[in-house]
Image (cartoon, rainbow, N blue to C red; front, side):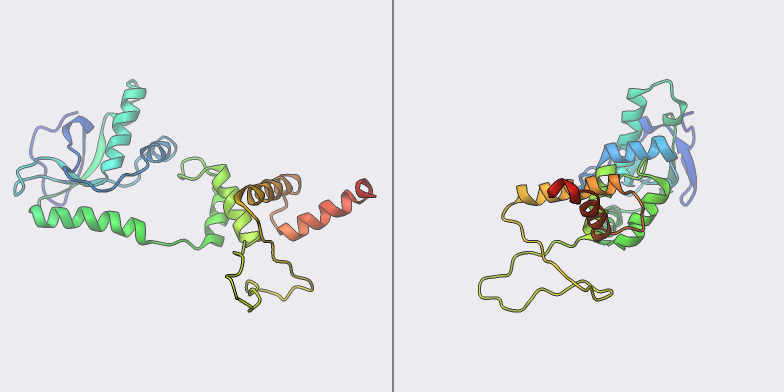
Length: 222
């Protein structure tokens, strides 16, 4: 239902997406499809931030959550009979031009400057699956390959120091894989992904899977 009175600063209400306006100078280009996927799987789990506009002259302007608003509109267009996209949760502020711009910038910057603990990220994705997370199964495969087998760049010209092994138990035998081009690297990535599907035990490393594969196919190579 459309709002009939002005919202109070600091409150959270629900409003029709059509009553809101995206920020007039948003520099961020977000992944609207990924957000839409999350909304379909998880619903809206946090409100967007909207400026009432008393001091800027631009009413109902989104400061944080512009791409969530776009995702709501896209979903409503794709499925107009789904009531979930009729209203969006909004947290209301009423700030001047300078503060509005700062909120938009810090919201975008804070998102970009964060980092991930890759091991924890992979573990979480394996626990819940990739649906509605913004990640695909291919993304998860690539993350697991990167964790199991770090690819080291060829040494610079004149470099003599041997490559450093990743932290962990000292292996009895160590190999460094160097590729001549991206095509060779992609062939290796595809092979490692195939090994994972053939031997899905999460406790196995790439080396473990490769050892099993070589043992199982030993007769094919003699």
